[in-house]
Image (cartoon, rainbow, N blue to C red):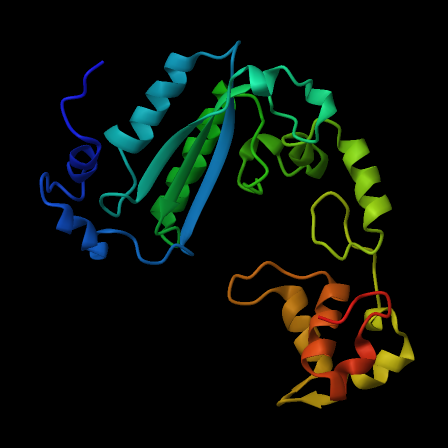
Length: 258
């Protein structure tokens, strides 16, 4: 097949740029959303068989071309990432943690300006439409709280990604019993005073650069500025190492100094 345009001119002719033969137009970042934190995305896996691919294609066309969300060009984006091939499918699904090796490709989408009610409604409606057409399978990069097919069921959510959820949980418990590394497979065990009892309990009230050690640990545990919340032990370790004088007593004994 011979393409009528070069790759660069194809990019330059996309909606929102419309500047064929003018590469300098790519420097105009004002055309693109500037705050990527205000976005929401999702992903479904497209299996090789048993799916009405034409119906899926029609839904993609409907939500991203015929009636896109408000906000202008690039507010809604959809990508198809190829997955198939014998190097992937010749490995049994049960032999790896990843449970969706038999997918043909992923349907990935992203909506910017997600603080807009209209955009979030658009995202939810699109997700619900895909629920009817595709199995409830996704890729682990996408945490899936907005995937309506799991109905808020944590075990169902985990089964979207892993080939053997009980086995993955057992490995996680064995290799990381204190859940130092955050993961949705195993909920962190309840801890008090960073596992150091009264030794840390007294230090919780110490002031470190204007804030108590306890409030700093809580800040990390609850998340801030859209950061992912920390496991308590990890938060204790960070604060104790940042402020070893007032907060050092709260460093978990089994964790290395940062």
